Image (cartoon, rainbow, N blue to C red; front, side, top):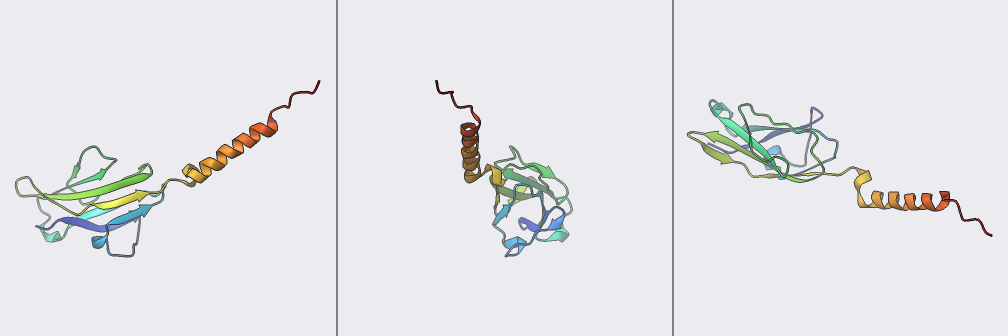
Length: 137
């Protein structure tokens, strides 16, 4: 029995292409608003009868999600770094795990350090120019 591996990766229901094959994929970078849906299969698809699949996005999921189909999907994952873990159960509770895939979800530009700095400076300038000056007596 071989370990499960990624055979497709979709963003907005469109396949997302990378510089290498899905099987060789170890790192993924996504924008904050991209919805992703990895599809997992064992290497030998004809052995799927009676198999269970489990996946976990380490840093987001508390527990493994066990499924009997071969797809997993995530939405509204906050920006950050995660690891996508995949495994297949065969026999009497024996699990075969795939190599983890690192996923980095980028923060929106307004949450970047430079944007927050600009907003803070802009807010201070606004206060400076719109506060009434004390009258001279």
